[in-house]
Length: 84
Image (cartoon, rainbow, N blue to C red; front, side, top):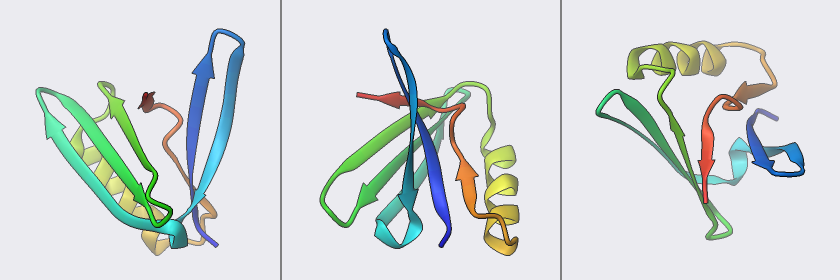
């Protein structure tokens, strides 16, 4: 199963969470003022918002297309900051 990898950091360090694509209800990507913002809406009702200033929408779309077409197991969003 394909998954999306998220990175959660606190003062005590960082941990990773994997979200199975089958559990996604919606996957919204928007570019605003040079930042890429992602909202993952899960079937459980939970929502996760992420933000990256380091990636453009074009680069993100290219990476996502490669992930969709490949045998890769997870799509890495560790460089995106999880907004709480």
